[in-house]
Image (cartoon, rainbow, N blue to C red; front, side, top):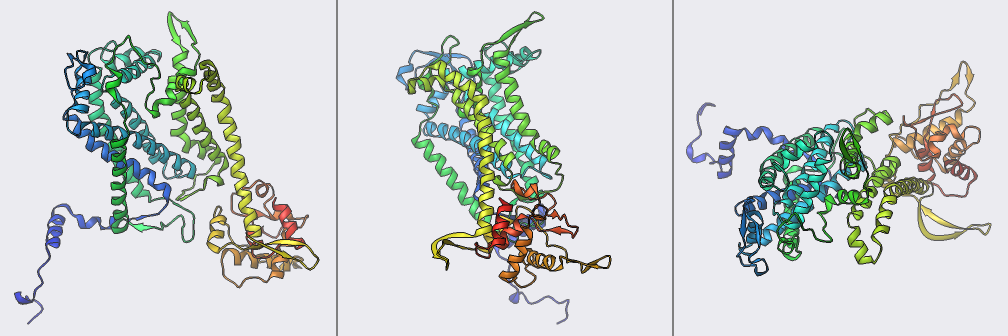
Length: 602
């Protein structure tokens, strides 16, 4: 049989059904060309789950929202209720409110789906806020991910607006109060406020078009934009590759983790069902937004203790804390009591969040690409600012519940309001200072751990009668994680002579060179304890200690920006603070050279 002859039919192996389906699909969609996605690597860290929680909650939102559209009537025409909920019999209400009560009491599983939809919205917005905060604190917004940060920020704003529009649709007394506030905020915008109000509400509030317009925004416009931005966001995540925390074998040019298929796919599928199960449990046992107890919206009524959903609480608190300031200009009244807290303050807050990657790059001058994440403690200023921002949000959030706090805590409403007014300025500043000091303290504690090792709890008595605690060196992986905050490089080889004159510090420089190569390169054998003590004694010498340790940069907990410090004796670069710290972690305390190096580090 020649090479061109076909083998007998009896000896062929028929392709399986799965192969035939795959081949048929590939011939029409070219799925085999996407096989590189199967090996896409995802690193592992618990903080990465916030984005997944938001994504899976969005999927539940879409499914439950499609179901609710089959029964909800977004009409403002009036009707008299005669349904199964007796306390509302004979009450005039809109068709939107009547259909919401009908879904809750007369459609099988309607109340469960309504509450599942609402809990999913709250969970998604909360997960997005934590997801954004995680990116902020770890520095993943830096080059080349600035645009992806902007996409994520726009997603957060749109989802927040989607939640506000969605819980306004039932046309109950609580949501109507929120719409009344939104109309007042819109009218307070100079020059364009009246035009925006007419566009949003279709005329004077409450009117007959607001629910229909908001319904179109809620089910078509905003979800469509969110899906498009989410798709672009995920594509950029794949294109830029996933960020990861520093650790062994992790560099700026690789990703250490598990492939998309089958490991990550199986874990993600299980996590989706876990999120869906938790949301279903909340929907089944935790009541939320009982519109039948509020009654239909009437412009002449409002309830005490009216609170919006949590993501709009900061805006409510800002409005309640702001004094009623206003002035007239050119025949027009400018209401600062609404303009400042509801327009200017939120705009400034959102602008700072959106432009932070560019602001930080401008202040620090850092234009490099970053694919490794930072620990929050390694950037005290950024972390302190983020925590201070959260503190400001929380102060305004609790200010939005000043009436409830006054009633439950038996305090004066005016006292709580003044506490919020003062706290808006005092609490973020105090939080900033405390957070920054905590971060610097954690850095110093880690440096002390590198110097002296781990406490063992064992006490040893020295020949001279002194009792000391025995320390053990940290394991190499932990040392690597603590030293990986800056990319240090080994020292250059010592020069035997300079301009024909022998180098007077040749032995000290050779010892430091060998110590550096052993610490950061593992290229040679470990130096002897005596050699390590001599090198440390040279680093801690009063004449050249500040130059060897990086001077001021080492004393405040920050390594030099270029990874090493310059020497003052003209012999080239010397080891940074982490070099002496890691070396001392291998020997015991009690020697003069080590104590001298300790004092320089602290």
